[in-house]
Each structure stands twice: as structure tokens, then as C-alpha cells.
Length: 319
Ligand code: ADP
Ligand code: F6P
Image: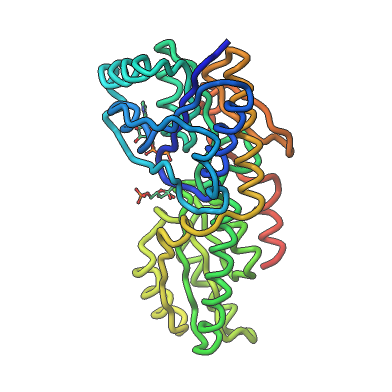
């Protein structure tokens, strides 16, 4: 039976991570398991940057955005020698197992550690929603609502000035943020890697829009698809729509977690500890049709996330 567990947050931070850390801490303490918070992700694991949690450590944290444990990108962790040293640090305090809250990169780190004999459980913490086989990742809901708020504001000024407004959002290569925000905010055009990008078609649709009764337009696009400033120039020249491009950036990663992200993080944190208690490792916690479950990290990482059933088709019906 596991006696001591660590928990860390890694990769891009996400609102709701704090709720997951709190749930891991509380569940451990309620079961008589010693629990350490590891600061700064895998970098902190390597440096032995640990805080022993008691019942006060995670007080007043569930409502906070970001991650109070801090996060880091630490590419050195891909090196087996670095991981060996991290395991030595864990041994020094008797830490036998680890909960890793992060995205697919962090899952890779968790898997590698498990293969080296340390049971790890991943929890999907990323605003991008780019992990397969989970309905949602922690942080997605909050970021989505932040984007919709931004789009509502952009609509006001876009409408006042009769402009076309482009908003680039995060998601890495997953279009879930863009497609859901685009539908929720009534965007004219939604561009994601799943939908594909054809600039000529976008321009034709905006021309048609302008020729009808529309005096302004909103375009939502996932990052890494095209240079949105150049796209704005091309649209302006081709359609006559005065066009402005906005990149929402890290703004969409911050802020108070939504109720949904707090609940999701809390439920996933509990489940991660239960899996470690059962002697499991190399698994990640997923929400499948609303039910919290554990899946094999190798299988989850071997697949690319497929966008929500039917959501692209539905978005097309609203054009
Ligand atoms: P995310 O977890 O949000 O996808 P990253 O891709 O930056 O973010 O990964 C977070 C961290 O996970 C990396 O900085 C590194 O410490 C660790 N990591 C990523 N890939 C691997 C890998 N192949 N092996 C070991 N550790 C990895
Ligand atoms: O992983 C989440 C994410 O927000 C991506 O959507 C984005 O591409 C990336 O992180 C940006 O990361 P950084 O914090 O390194 O700028």
C-alpha cells in the first residue's frame, strides 16, 4: 500500500489545476498517505523542490487561477539520466508515486517515470482540450468562457466600426477552443486545423457576407494556422472590409477557474489517488461521457484528438 505520494503541475498552466492539487492532497491526508507538493513541474522533481502538505496547505486555493505549485517547461527531463536523478530526489523523502497534472508532454514524462519503476498517474490539465479520450481537459471551460467574453467585446467595436475582426485563439493543433467559442459568440467564420484553411474561400464568404446585409464580421482562428496580420491585410484588400487582427494570447490562460473546471479538477484528483492506492501506474484520468475513469497513457498518446462528435457539422449549419 502506497504511503507517500507527490503531485506536480507541468507544461502550460490551466485554471482548475489548483482544485486538482487540493483534491490530491485532501484525499491522501484523509487516507493517511503522506503527500508532497512538487514545485515547478519536473524541474522541481529534479531539484527536490518539495513541500510537505498538511490540511492547511491547500486552503483558499480552489478559487485561484494559474497553479500555486508553479509550472515549468523542462525539456531536460527527456534525458534518462535527469529522470534517474529525479527519482533519487523522490527516494530521499520516501515519495513512492506521483500525480502529474499537465498536457500530453507531461503525460510522456509520467509514462517514462512509470517505466523506470515509479507509478505515475496523469491528469489532463491544459486549456487546449487536445488530449484524446477525455470529454474535456481541466482549464478548457474557463478559457472558452474567457474567449467568448473577448469575442463579445470585439463584436461591439467591430459592429461600431463596420469592420471584420479576426481573433486568434490557443489550442495548439486542436480546434476545440475556436469551434466552441465561434459557435457561442456567433462568429461568421471559424478556422481550425480540423476544418482546414482555404484563404480564397474565406475571402469569398466574406465578400458574400458584405454583399448581403452584414456590416461587420467575426473570424475565429486557431493558432499556428496562418499569420493573422497578413490575413487581415489580404481580407481588407480583397473584400473592402476594414479588418483588424487580434491575438488573445496568454490572457485566455489566466483567471478564476469556472465551477465546471473546479469540479472536474476535484473529481480527477480524487480518482488519481485511488488509482495509485490500487497500485496502478502509467494511467491517466479521463472524463468519458461524464464518468471519471482511468485509461492507459500509451493508448491515449498514440491517438490524435478527434473533435467533438458533430460539432463541425453543426457549426456549418449556422453559417
Ligand atoms: P504539456 O504538458 O502542456 O503538453 P510540454 O509539452 O511543454 O507541455 O511538456 C511539459 C513537460 O513535460 C516538458 O517540459 C518536459 O519536462 C516533460 N516532457 C515532455 N515530453 C517529454 C518526454 N518525451 N519525455 C520526458 N519528459 C517529457
Ligand atoms: O499548452 C497550452 C498552450 O497554451 C498552447 O495553446 C500554446 O501554444 C502554448 O501553451 C503556449 O505556451 P507558452 O506558455 O510556452 O507560451
